[in-house]
Amino acid sequence: MRSQPRIVPWATNEEFLQVFHWLYADIDQDPASVQRGIDRVLAWNCRGRVPIAVKATMDLVELQLRERKQVAAAVPLSQNELQLLYGCVMTRFVNILEDSQQKGYFARSLYVIAQQIGLPLHFVQIRHAATHEDLPSLTVLRRASRQALQWLYNTYWCAQIKPDTLHTVSAATMDEITAHLAQYKADRKTYLRAKESTAHRATVATMRKLLKLLTADTIQDSVIPILLRPGNLVPASKKKRPSAEELAISPVVTLLWMPLLQFLDSEFDNFLPELLSAMIARLDATDAFDMRLPSLNPFEELPEESDAQFKQPSYLMTLTCWLIFFISNSNTEESMVTQMILDLVLEECLRRPNAYTQSILKVLMQQDEELKTSLVPFMQFIGRVQQLQNGHAATPSAEGVDVEAILVKDNDDALKKQFRELRAKLGLEPDYSQPVGTEVVSDASEAMQDVESGGWRLCSEEEWSSCPIGCLPGGKVPDLDLTPPSMAIQDMDIDLVVAS
Image (tube, rainbow, N blue to C red):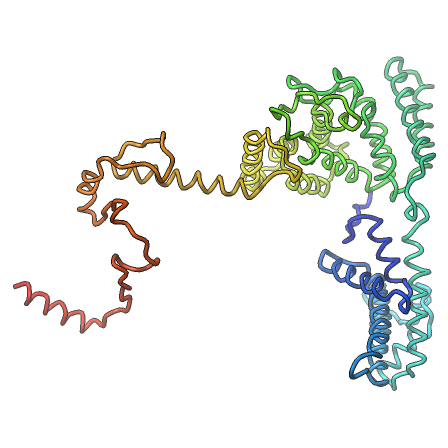
């Protein structure tokens, strides 16, 4: 069984690389960059679990930066305070590293664990002295902190920041990947037509050649964008794409590409999540629709332009049908889609409300009984978004959907409904030809007579005036204090005597 994709608090590899450069910048020459790295790691702590090596790096760097800033302070730190700070940081550094290796029922010696993970033994000795004995000298602690940063750099950061992540994929590599995909497509078509074993072997060989050009860190920037180009997962011919009559991927297309997708998914745990996320990202409403069009028919073709091929509704509908295909087959034994991937698709679709993601959400609701009720408000909201877009289609909008306008319109509709219900209770004929607030009640006197017995009275515009909430007519503040029972009885007797 494949391991699940690893969840990290940074959004991209570039962000992780940038934080690395910030943390290991020259503190004396560029302290602002070091501070930015510290702040970013603190932000990661709010997002989720941060690797212990990253936390340890931040602790060590922050203390070194603090020591340099305190020199110019009005009351600088004393030598004993610095020793306490360095001793605490080094103790925590050793503890969090070695506690992560305590996986057995019985605790193991710190020296044994240090030897296994390659941690210098004098770090353990410094930790022991700072905890149980006299604090080591400040010179020793400073040197140990610099060595700890170098050890983290050699054992963690260099292993995470691979050469493939230092630079983007070269143009030559992209061309080679494109050539291999074209060769795979030709070999696979030959096999599907003639069922020849030689064509099948050629297909497998091409996939292995393609694998040598890919890593888990570069697939999102290399093979996935190429697969999403027209002519690959999305057929170049518009006749082979889904239509209004048949909203489904052609079986010929799935037979052509599924072997390659399954092969890449078996080699890279993050391939399918990255592929589906890239598909949904292309369905973003701000890019998918041209707001100047007279209508938002998803099957109406856009004019041919440089980038218009990625915004054509038939292209976007094909990506939608691919996503629906994966979701619909998620319950089968050979499915590549896990529950974690379904949750990812759900989250990405809710962030991009439009006609295409609405279709995907409907399929998710059919697959999960619990979602049928919990997604109803979101589906209603997406419907309102579509109504607003259709109502303002002639107005260009570079900022996308105006959510505030939707909420204001919903509030107006609710007020109109309440006003009509009130007229119905008063026995007045509804008049929808006039806007709310300009309707004139011609038979208000009859309505007042009907409701006067119940204690309610419909005020005319001349009689009505505003007053604070909770006040009686005339601006009088009611007395809400409870009257004692004895006084209530006396008041009742007085009233009876007066009445008699």
